[in-house]
Amino acid sequence: MPTVVVTGGAGKLGRAVVADLGEHGWDVVIFDRATPPEGAVYLPVDLTDYGQVLDAMLGVEERYSGVDALVHLAAVPAPGLVPDHSTFANNMNSTWNVVSAARRALVRNIVWASSETVLGLPFDTPPPYVPVDEEYAPRPESTYSLVKTLEETMAAQLCRWDPRLKMIGLRFSNVMRPEDYAAFPGFQDDATKRKWNLWGYIDARDGAQAVRRALESELTGCEVFVIANADTVMERPNAELLAECFPTVEVRGELGTHDTLLSIDKARRLLGYDPQFSWREQPSRQA
Image (cartoon, rainbow, N blue to C red; front, side, top):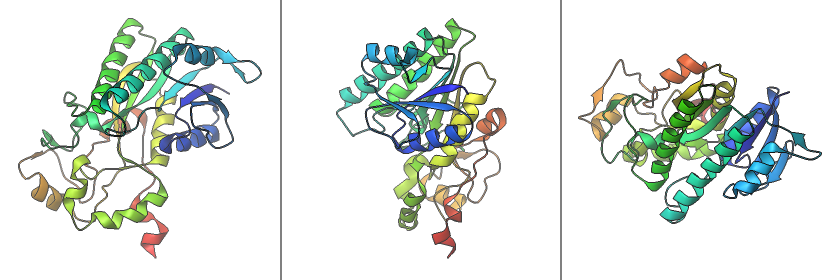
């Protein structure tokens, strides 16, 4: 079976990715500083230390030899969690170290977590149109988002250097596990609580599907995709939400009642991505 390194495999999205890849025929090796659940090979790797990353990428005696693919999820996961310079230093250096080590190990199949934040979140400046998509230039509004934008630029240049390289950046929306859906009723009375990302989310299990489809895609070069669920977090229809929060923003195409305003059309078309889970279908909501 092919071997894939998953950095950040102990994280919220990482755990779902590790489980999904294992179920679909991948041997998974986790690089993380936090201990993940049992079931995959785990190495406590400091991604800011290039020597550690390169050594681990090349193989570890009696554990694995060689790597076929890389999924890079590890990062300070949001703005404001640590000082801004720490966010930049950790996230930018970790990504460069991991990608550089993978290339030295002749790994040319790389998928990494970009972010919905490059679309202009928290949308204090309204988006240029809705649904937002990959067609307009990144609009980073935080140090965290700036790093994600730089990662996308770096990936494009690395793929220019090596036409055989595939680097797919997934602009994940706000990651949710099923137990997080209990909080969704609290969003309903105030549309402004979730306007910051156009009321979007991604079920971790659907995020994992997107990672797998990106890994198994025959695309080459650099591509980025918005990855969200097919619906919003709100019971109110999109037309009402936009009239209240973004009344001057252009609406492109037909606007579904609850369809995501973070367009996943490109991911559907090129990756075959098809979200399977929704907070609206949870047993507690149906009872």
